[in-house]
Amino acid sequence: MSFTLVAAFDKNRLIGADNDLPWYLPADLKIFKKNTLNKPILMGRKTCESLKKPLPRRVNWVLTRQQDYQRDGFKIIHDWQHLKSDNEIMVIGGARIFELLLPEADKMIITHIEAEFEGDTYFPKVNWSDWRIQEQTDHPIDEVNPHYPFKVITYHKR
Image 1 (cartoon, rainbow, N blue to C red):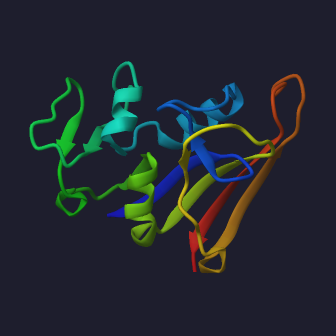
Image 2: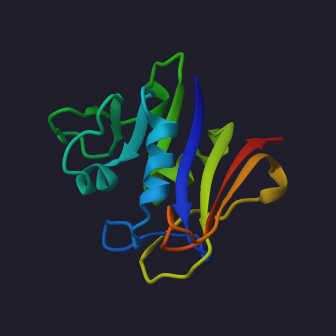
């Protein structure tokens, strides 16, 4: 079993505002879908509650301390070590889940948004010397991405 953290953050590592994304970036949503489709995803309860329904064509795991938590279409666990998968598990947030699984992750796919936003939830601090860049794709402002410049970087643990 391997963990890949999938996140988007601004120049200050901001990932959320009031349990939602602080930006609207359709080009990045397409990249997120491409990277997570047909793979199991793991999220925290608050991230789960921010979704209207389970993400389609993915097994939707929710890690929560609330023993009685249930939601249709989601598989609830209380300890990530109880996950059983031969597949890469895509960790999609939120902040506490990223912090918990950052030491366990083998890979990160990070969208670095070249802007600053207001919000209340941050990606954990990363010791970047522990990671090497495998791939980087730049997305300037253009007709496909009229909102904010961003880059998607795939990191592998050294």
